[in-house]
Image 1 (cartoon, rainbow, N blue to C red):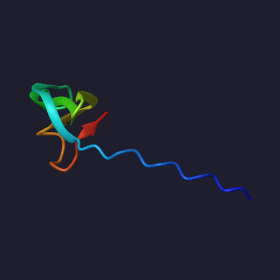
Image 2: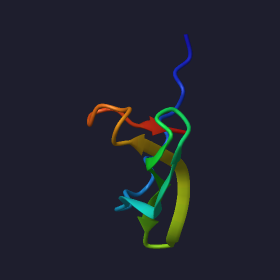
Image 3: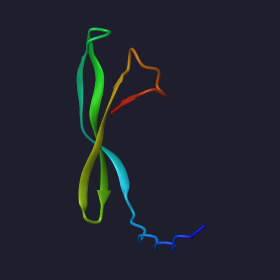
Length: 69
């Protein structure tokens, strides 16, 4: 069995996750403007990157559940 040489680890970069462009929207389930939705962004030394979206309805979803895509 041949062992692969270990590759050097990339340098660690500090990032911060945050919510952006949060808005109240229409929830098609409970028929009210109770859906909060926004983008998930990473803040890095190089800039900001959108990595996903989230949505949570204050009426339909328990506090610990959110729809992340």
